[in-house]
Length: 99
Image (cartoon, rainbow, N blue to C red; front, side, top):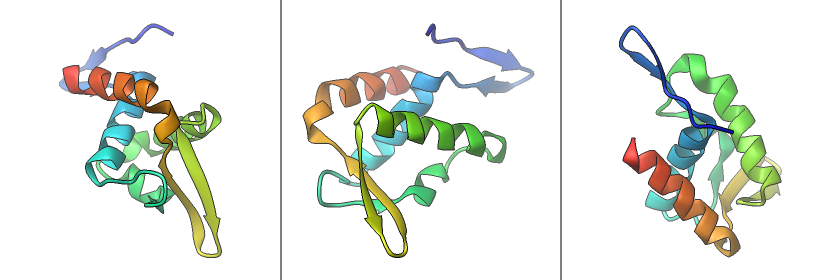
């Protein structure tokens, strides 16, 4: 997939890799590695409301790529970063930070 940046007026539409980078950067900043986890709903904060559906799809993609570890609790699904995939995590974060 080619990262595309499309502008409509002043609003920029993010590529999927940039969304992944922002999600992973947020988890890394808050130290959510291995046994420290957070609710999936918290990752949608900080994105425009019209992007929430796309962010949910991106989180699902990150789970499929095994970048995010899932912990199922009786009060919802929690996730953390998988340190075995740190090269891929850093790649996405660097792409986001270049933006």
